[in-house]
Length: 290
Image 1 (cartoon, helix red, strand yellow):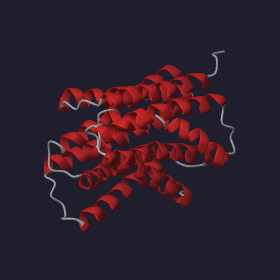
Image 2 (image 1 turned 45 degrees about the horizontal axis):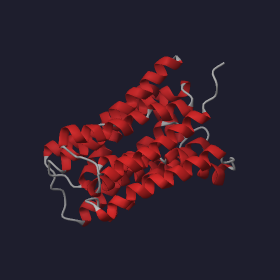
Image 3 (image 1 turned 120 degrees about the horizontal axis):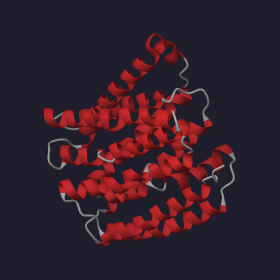
Image 4 (image 1 turned 135 degrees about the horizontal axis):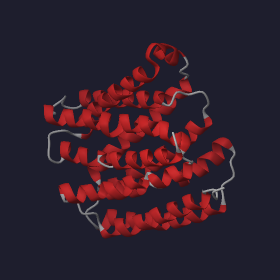
């Protein structure tokens, strides 16, 4: 695969994944699903998609791939599953724009976690981007108390922390099939969703919203991530981060167009500061073309 084809695929992955938040809005705000029911069926869709990809890529060697799974690989998948849970739960208490803008902090957090876990030096650019992002986050969070966004939206800060940890652990782990964390994450969603629903009032979701969850887990998450894992091998990480910003830009736009969800002004101003600092950091990491 050429660099150009890989870049186009990564960009397309960002566009496709950007519809994930909108799918949850259709199933919850305009449907019958609560967050945990939706997460269960999202996990079902994810497991189906990743299982099909594994079967197609490895065919008769699937079981040998499973034999190479280590506890650390499963742990990385559990972290990814937690991120997916946090994303959906955060969407119940705040806007799509708020969650997505916060999510862009993952590369900055990953830089510090790489320092702790892998002893990699934190660059000056990362320190500057951190300071700017903190300003942006303060502006965003100022709206959680004085405006319509609930203080529970502060929970969304766990999403970029989880993404940063996930990215660092993936880099630090060798000989891991990239589909294993995705499969483990899907199973984690199913288990967490089933337990939460069982402790509550049981399943009350209708067929339409269950199918939306399965569709979101497979076509808006599982299959795109499988494509991303292939495409990123020919696209440098800084360029990958920039191309995936398409999700951050488009997801709030879809929410505004299709469900008339208008983000707070503080979210847009603070989010723009965070997004700008991350883009600047990413561009500063790019190597000059030879």
